[in-house]
Amino acid sequence: MSIFKSVYRVLRIVLVVAAIFGMAYQGRIKEDFENYKMRAIPALMYHSISGVPEGWPADLCIAPEVFEEHLKYLQARGYNVITAPQAMILLKSRQNVMNTVILTFDDGYENNYTEAFPLLKKYGFRGNFYIVGNDVGKTKNQDGVKKYMTYGQIKQMHDQGMEIGSHSMSHDPLTSIKPDMLPWEIYQPLNLFYEKMGFWISGIAFPNGAFNDTIIAEVRKYFKYEYGFSGIAGCNTLKIVTETPFALRRAGVYDRGNGVKDIETVLQ
Ligand SMILES: [Zn+2]
Image 1 (cartoon, rainbow, N blue to C red):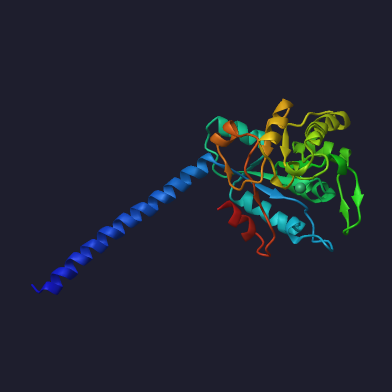
Image 2: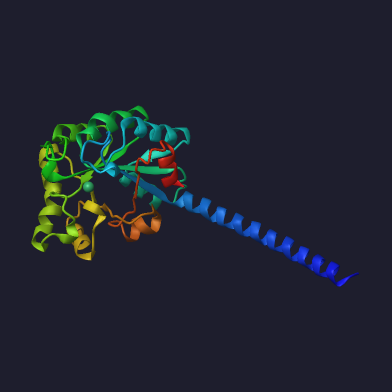
């Protein structure tokens, strides 16, 4: 046998062994990922369910037709679309949470009530809405039309199973406001919403996702608060909901013009 033939044979064996290990390794990664999906719940972040008004950043808007495509996608795959408190209970019970998702809506735009709410009901899904205390019922015209839900509308959504939470009073990032304003930003929505609508909220979504230890310490003072959404990207696991419930993860969904692909990308 020539030296070349032996080298070729050895090389072939090495390649086959490497391929087998490679496949096994890939299978392992896939299995790890599948295991992770059984133990982790993504939270998706929406804002305005509308076309893009003049002067608005496109990133804040998803057209109602596109939003419905997202809901159809979730329904077709048998997704369990639930509230943040429900998700925390599920994770703590160590159940398989594969195909479970939290849909969140920030800022309290009126179209959350007129567009998102009826669609969520149509598909039997529950949404999570984070409201800016100072903006309830207001219309701001300086940059096109910015209309916010009224207490009556928010209460209706709450009474029909939607989760309502705080998005602070002013929407200024809590990390950049004067420390003596923190209690007002954090405590006031609890009180105000109870006074106006008759129920206690338990969650806060930090404006722009911004938080630090001081802010979390302030939130923890008011025991009604049980969770907070941070700006950290990723999924929520048992470890996160038990160890850092005020730094839950979220991922933004943006309309990149690909319809349902835009939600698929975030979920995979
Ligand atoms: Zn916001």
